[in-house]
Image (cartoon, rainbow, N blue to C red):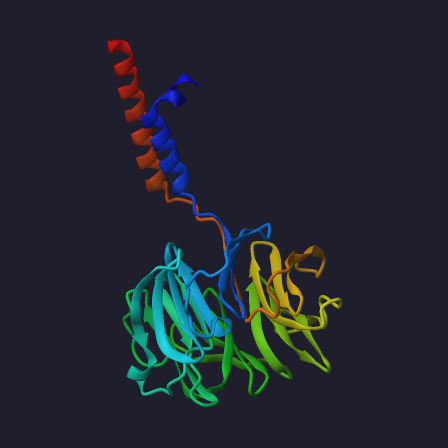
Length: 310
Protein backbone atom coordinates (compact mmCIF):
# COMPACT_ATOMS: atom_id res chain seq x y z
CA UNK A 1 0.00 0.00 0.00
CA UNK A 2 2.92 2.34 0.65
CA UNK A 3 3.65 2.37 -3.07
CA UNK A 4 0.42 4.27 -3.63
CA UNK A 5 2.01 7.21 -1.84
CA UNK A 6 4.48 7.63 -4.63
CA UNK A 7 3.46 10.55 -6.88
CA UNK A 8 4.73 8.67 -9.92
CA UNK A 9 2.59 5.62 -9.20
CA UNK A 10 -0.37 7.87 -8.59
CA UNK A 11 0.12 9.39 -12.04
CA UNK A 12 0.36 5.93 -13.61
CA UNK A 13 -2.83 4.86 -11.87
CA UNK A 14 -4.52 7.98 -13.17
CA UNK A 15 -3.43 7.14 -16.72
CA UNK A 16 -4.87 3.65 -16.35
CA UNK A 17 -8.22 4.99 -15.16
CA UNK A 18 -8.24 7.63 -17.91
CA UNK A 19 -7.93 4.87 -20.53
CA UNK A 20 -11.48 3.81 -19.63
CA UNK A 21 -14.06 6.01 -21.34
CA UNK A 22 -17.19 6.53 -19.25
CA UNK A 23 -20.39 5.13 -20.73
CA UNK A 24 -22.74 7.94 -21.70
CA UNK A 25 -26.16 8.63 -23.14
CA UNK A 26 -26.20 11.32 -25.86
CA UNK A 27 -29.55 13.02 -26.39
CA UNK A 28 -30.78 15.47 -29.04
CA UNK A 29 -33.24 17.80 -27.34
CA UNK A 30 -35.11 20.88 -28.51
CA UNK A 31 -32.51 23.18 -26.94
CA UNK A 32 -29.20 21.31 -27.09
CA UNK A 33 -27.26 18.08 -27.45
CA UNK A 34 -26.97 16.75 -23.91
CA UNK A 35 -25.04 13.91 -22.26
CA UNK A 36 -25.97 11.78 -19.27
CA UNK A 37 -24.45 8.98 -17.22
CA UNK A 38 -26.16 5.60 -17.43
CA UNK A 39 -27.97 6.33 -14.16
CA UNK A 40 -29.59 9.38 -15.75
CA UNK A 41 -27.35 11.98 -14.09
CA UNK A 42 -26.79 15.00 -16.32
CA UNK A 43 -23.15 15.39 -17.41
CA UNK A 44 -23.32 18.18 -20.00
CA UNK A 45 -26.41 20.26 -20.74
CA UNK A 46 -25.03 21.81 -23.95
CA UNK A 47 -22.32 19.69 -25.50
CA UNK A 48 -21.98 21.77 -28.67
CA UNK A 49 -23.01 25.39 -27.88
CA UNK A 50 -24.72 27.17 -30.75
CA UNK A 51 -25.47 24.01 -32.71
CA UNK A 52 -28.37 24.80 -35.04
CA UNK A 53 -31.48 22.62 -34.76
CA UNK A 54 -30.16 20.28 -32.05
CA UNK A 55 -33.34 18.18 -31.93
CA UNK A 56 -32.64 17.16 -35.55
CA UNK A 57 -29.01 16.22 -34.86
CA UNK A 58 -27.83 12.70 -35.64
CA UNK A 59 -24.39 11.42 -34.71
CA UNK A 60 -22.08 8.43 -34.65
CA UNK A 61 -19.19 8.01 -32.22
CA UNK A 62 -15.88 6.18 -32.48
CA UNK A 63 -13.46 6.59 -29.59
CA UNK A 64 -13.18 10.34 -29.04
CA UNK A 65 -14.50 11.19 -32.52
CA UNK A 66 -18.09 12.35 -32.92
CA UNK A 67 -19.50 12.65 -36.46
CA UNK A 68 -22.53 14.94 -36.47
CA UNK A 69 -25.09 15.79 -39.12
CA UNK A 70 -28.40 17.58 -39.08
CA UNK A 71 -31.51 17.34 -41.23
CA UNK A 72 -31.40 21.08 -41.93
CA UNK A 73 -27.69 21.19 -42.86
CA UNK A 74 -25.97 19.27 -45.71
CA UNK A 75 -22.61 19.10 -43.92
CA UNK A 76 -21.26 16.26 -41.78
CA UNK A 77 -19.07 17.75 -39.07
CA UNK A 78 -16.47 16.11 -36.91
CA UNK A 79 -16.20 16.93 -33.21
CA UNK A 80 -14.53 15.40 -30.21
CA UNK A 81 -16.84 13.73 -27.72
CA UNK A 82 -16.18 16.69 -25.43
CA UNK A 83 -17.83 18.95 -28.02
CA UNK A 84 -14.75 20.58 -29.59
CA UNK A 85 -14.97 21.17 -33.35
CA UNK A 86 -12.31 19.28 -35.31
CA UNK A 87 -13.56 19.73 -38.88
CA UNK A 88 -16.56 21.91 -39.72
CA UNK A 89 -16.74 20.53 -43.26
CA UNK A 90 -15.82 16.87 -42.76
CA UNK A 91 -18.11 16.06 -45.68
CA UNK A 92 -20.48 18.21 -47.73
CA UNK A 93 -23.42 16.37 -49.30
CA UNK A 94 -23.69 19.08 -51.95
CA UNK A 95 -20.62 17.47 -53.50
CA UNK A 96 -22.98 14.67 -54.53
CA UNK A 97 -25.41 17.15 -56.13
CA UNK A 98 -27.94 16.32 -53.43
CA UNK A 99 -30.45 18.74 -51.98
CA UNK A 100 -29.28 21.33 -49.49
CA UNK A 101 -30.60 19.45 -46.48
CA UNK A 102 -28.70 17.11 -44.21
CA UNK A 103 -28.92 13.46 -43.30
CA UNK A 104 -31.73 11.62 -41.57
CA UNK A 105 -29.37 9.14 -39.94
CA UNK A 106 -25.70 8.29 -39.63
CA UNK A 107 -24.29 5.04 -38.23
CA UNK A 108 -20.80 3.63 -37.90
CA UNK A 109 -19.30 0.19 -38.49
CA UNK A 110 -15.55 -0.07 -37.99
CA UNK A 111 -14.11 2.75 -40.10
CA UNK A 112 -17.16 3.11 -42.36
CA UNK A 113 -19.92 5.67 -41.88
CA UNK A 114 -23.33 4.96 -43.42
CA UNK A 115 -25.30 8.14 -44.16
CA UNK A 116 -28.97 8.20 -45.16
CA UNK A 117 -29.70 11.38 -47.09
CA UNK A 118 -33.13 12.69 -48.15
CA UNK A 119 -33.31 13.60 -51.84
CA UNK A 120 -36.90 14.76 -51.73
CA UNK A 121 -38.47 11.37 -50.88
CA UNK A 122 -36.24 9.20 -53.07
CA UNK A 123 -33.12 8.98 -51.02
CA UNK A 124 -29.66 7.49 -51.41
CA UNK A 125 -27.52 5.90 -48.72
CA UNK A 126 -23.84 6.56 -49.17
CA UNK A 127 -20.73 5.53 -47.27
CA UNK A 128 -17.74 7.51 -46.00
CA UNK A 129 -14.51 6.53 -44.35
CA UNK A 130 -13.82 8.01 -40.93
CA UNK A 131 -11.21 10.18 -42.65
CA UNK A 132 -13.95 11.82 -44.74
CA UNK A 133 -13.41 10.00 -48.03
CA UNK A 134 -16.47 9.09 -50.08
CA UNK A 135 -16.39 5.33 -50.69
CA UNK A 136 -17.53 5.16 -54.30
CA UNK A 137 -21.00 6.16 -55.46
CA UNK A 138 -24.20 5.79 -53.45
CA UNK A 139 -24.40 2.42 -51.72
CA UNK A 140 -28.17 2.40 -52.26
CA UNK A 141 -29.01 4.52 -55.26
CA UNK A 142 -31.48 7.38 -55.49
CA UNK A 143 -34.99 6.12 -56.23
CA UNK A 144 -34.71 2.88 -54.25
CA UNK A 145 -35.63 4.20 -50.80
CA UNK A 146 -38.50 6.46 -49.79
CA UNK A 147 -37.30 8.86 -47.10
CA UNK A 148 -34.95 6.67 -44.99
CA UNK A 149 -35.18 7.73 -41.34
CA UNK A 150 -33.19 5.14 -39.41
CA UNK A 151 -30.63 2.38 -40.03
CA UNK A 152 -29.10 -0.55 -38.16
CA UNK A 153 -26.39 -3.07 -39.00
CA UNK A 154 -26.04 -6.76 -38.28
CA UNK A 155 -22.96 -8.26 -39.90
CA UNK A 156 -23.30 -7.60 -43.61
CA UNK A 157 -27.02 -6.81 -43.43
CA UNK A 158 -28.18 -3.20 -43.36
CA UNK A 159 -31.71 -2.56 -42.09
CA UNK A 160 -33.27 0.66 -43.42
CA UNK A 161 -36.52 2.20 -42.17
CA UNK A 162 -38.25 4.21 -44.90
CA UNK A 163 -40.91 6.54 -43.57
CA UNK A 164 -42.77 7.46 -46.74
CA UNK A 165 -43.72 3.91 -47.71
CA UNK A 166 -43.78 2.51 -44.17
CA UNK A 167 -41.25 -0.26 -44.68
CA UNK A 168 -38.14 -1.76 -43.19
CA UNK A 169 -35.95 -3.20 -45.91
CA UNK A 170 -32.80 -5.30 -45.69
CA UNK A 171 -29.80 -4.67 -47.93
CA UNK A 172 -26.29 -5.98 -48.41
CA UNK A 173 -24.11 -3.59 -46.41
CA UNK A 174 -21.20 -4.02 -48.83
CA UNK A 175 -22.92 -3.85 -52.20
CA UNK A 176 -26.24 -2.14 -51.45
CA UNK A 177 -28.18 -4.91 -53.19
CA UNK A 178 -31.65 -5.55 -51.81
CA UNK A 179 -32.08 -8.68 -49.73
CA UNK A 180 -35.73 -7.99 -48.94
CA UNK A 181 -36.94 -4.46 -49.63
CA UNK A 182 -40.26 -5.18 -47.89
CA UNK A 183 -38.95 -7.07 -44.89
CA UNK A 184 -41.55 -5.30 -42.71
CA UNK A 185 -44.47 -3.29 -44.10
CA UNK A 186 -47.46 -1.28 -42.89
CA UNK A 187 -45.60 1.15 -40.63
CA UNK A 188 -47.24 4.57 -40.37
CA UNK A 189 -45.12 7.63 -39.49
CA UNK A 190 -42.22 5.47 -38.37
CA UNK A 191 -39.22 7.33 -36.96
CA UNK A 192 -36.60 4.88 -35.70
CA UNK A 193 -35.49 1.28 -35.37
CA UNK A 194 -33.06 -0.52 -33.08
CA UNK A 195 -31.44 -3.92 -33.40
CA UNK A 196 -29.93 -6.41 -30.96
CA UNK A 197 -29.36 -10.01 -31.98
CA UNK A 198 -32.66 -11.41 -33.23
CA UNK A 199 -34.65 -8.52 -31.76
CA UNK A 200 -35.71 -5.65 -33.99
CA UNK A 201 -37.60 -2.75 -32.42
CA UNK A 202 -39.51 -0.14 -34.44
CA UNK A 203 -40.98 3.14 -33.26
CA UNK A 204 -44.10 4.01 -35.29
CA UNK A 205 -47.66 5.34 -35.08
CA UNK A 206 -50.29 2.66 -34.54
CA UNK A 207 -53.67 4.36 -34.63
CA UNK A 208 -53.66 7.35 -32.29
CA UNK A 209 -50.64 6.10 -30.32
CA UNK A 210 -46.94 6.09 -31.13
CA UNK A 211 -45.65 2.71 -29.99
CA UNK A 212 -42.66 0.37 -29.95
CA UNK A 213 -43.21 -2.91 -31.81
CA UNK A 214 -40.88 -5.89 -31.55
CA UNK A 215 -40.07 -8.07 -34.57
CA UNK A 216 -37.91 -11.10 -35.27
CA UNK A 217 -34.82 -9.66 -36.97
CA UNK A 218 -34.25 -12.86 -38.94
CA UNK A 219 -37.74 -13.45 -40.34
CA UNK A 220 -39.48 -10.08 -39.96
CA UNK A 221 -42.32 -11.74 -38.05
CA UNK A 222 -44.16 -9.58 -35.53
CA UNK A 223 -43.41 -10.67 -31.95
CA UNK A 224 -45.15 -7.97 -29.89
CA UNK A 225 -47.31 -5.24 -31.41
CA UNK A 226 -47.13 -2.87 -28.45
CA UNK A 227 -44.11 -3.70 -26.33
CA UNK A 228 -44.59 -0.96 -23.72
CA UNK A 229 -48.33 -0.14 -23.46
CA UNK A 230 -47.70 2.58 -20.86
CA UNK A 231 -45.91 4.69 -23.50
CA UNK A 232 -48.17 6.23 -26.13
CA UNK A 233 -45.94 9.12 -27.23
CA UNK A 234 -42.60 7.49 -28.09
CA UNK A 235 -40.21 9.52 -30.27
CA UNK A 236 -37.05 7.40 -30.51
CA UNK A 237 -35.79 3.94 -29.62
CA UNK A 238 -32.24 2.65 -29.27
CA UNK A 239 -30.47 -0.28 -27.62
CA UNK A 240 -27.29 -0.80 -25.65
CA UNK A 241 -26.29 -4.09 -24.08
CA UNK A 242 -29.45 -5.71 -22.74
CA UNK A 243 -31.34 -2.43 -22.36
CA UNK A 244 -33.86 -0.67 -24.55
CA UNK A 245 -33.92 3.14 -24.25
CA UNK A 246 -37.14 4.86 -25.30
CA UNK A 247 -37.62 8.59 -25.72
CA UNK A 248 -41.14 9.90 -25.17
CA UNK A 249 -43.10 13.01 -24.28
CA UNK A 250 -42.12 12.84 -20.58
CA UNK A 251 -38.44 11.93 -20.95
CA UNK A 252 -36.42 8.76 -21.51
CA UNK A 253 -37.04 5.34 -19.99
CA UNK A 254 -34.91 2.20 -19.80
CA UNK A 255 -36.55 -1.20 -20.38
CA UNK A 256 -35.63 -4.82 -20.94
CA UNK A 257 -36.28 -6.49 -24.30
CA UNK A 258 -39.66 -7.78 -23.13
CA UNK A 259 -40.87 -4.30 -22.25
CA UNK A 260 -40.29 -4.57 -18.50
CA UNK A 261 -39.33 -1.27 -16.88
CA UNK A 262 -35.79 -1.02 -15.53
CA UNK A 263 -36.21 2.72 -14.91
CA UNK A 264 -39.25 4.15 -16.67
CA UNK A 265 -38.21 7.71 -15.77
CA UNK A 266 -34.46 7.44 -16.22
CA UNK A 267 -34.19 10.98 -17.61
CA UNK A 268 -36.89 13.54 -16.95
CA UNK A 269 -35.35 16.92 -17.79
CA UNK A 270 -35.73 16.48 -21.56
CA UNK A 271 -39.03 15.87 -23.36
CA UNK A 272 -39.70 14.33 -26.79
CA UNK A 273 -36.01 13.75 -27.67
CA UNK A 274 -35.29 13.64 -31.38
CA UNK A 275 -32.40 11.19 -31.14
CA UNK A 276 -30.71 8.99 -28.51
CA UNK A 277 -27.34 7.26 -28.70
CA UNK A 278 -25.88 5.17 -25.89
CA UNK A 279 -22.10 4.77 -26.02
CA UNK A 280 -20.85 1.94 -23.78
CA UNK A 281 -17.70 2.15 -21.70
CA UNK A 282 -14.66 1.74 -23.91
CA UNK A 283 -12.41 -1.17 -22.97
CA UNK A 284 -8.72 -0.57 -23.76
CA UNK A 285 -6.98 -2.75 -26.34
CA UNK A 286 -4.61 -5.46 -25.01
CA UNK A 287 -1.68 -3.37 -26.23
CA UNK A 288 -2.85 -0.51 -24.03
CA UNK A 289 -2.95 -2.78 -20.99
CA UNK A 290 0.56 -4.02 -21.83
CA UNK A 291 1.90 -0.48 -22.08
CA UNK A 292 0.30 0.50 -18.78
CA UNK A 293 1.68 -2.62 -17.11
CA UNK A 294 5.15 -1.75 -18.38
CA UNK A 295 4.88 1.78 -17.01
CA UNK A 296 3.67 0.42 -13.69
CA UNK A 297 6.64 -1.97 -13.38
CA UNK A 298 9.01 0.84 -14.28
CA UNK A 299 7.41 3.04 -11.63
CA UNK A 300 7.74 0.37 -8.95
CA UNK A 301 11.44 -0.19 -9.80
CA UNK A 302 12.13 3.54 -9.76
CA UNK A 303 10.31 3.99 -6.47
CA UNK A 304 12.26 1.14 -4.83
CA UNK A 305 15.59 2.56 -6.00
CA UNK A 306 14.71 5.95 -4.58
CA UNK A 307 13.65 4.32 -1.32
CA UNK A 308 16.92 2.36 -1.05
CA UNK A 309 18.94 5.50 -1.74
CA UNK A 310 17.41 7.26 1.25
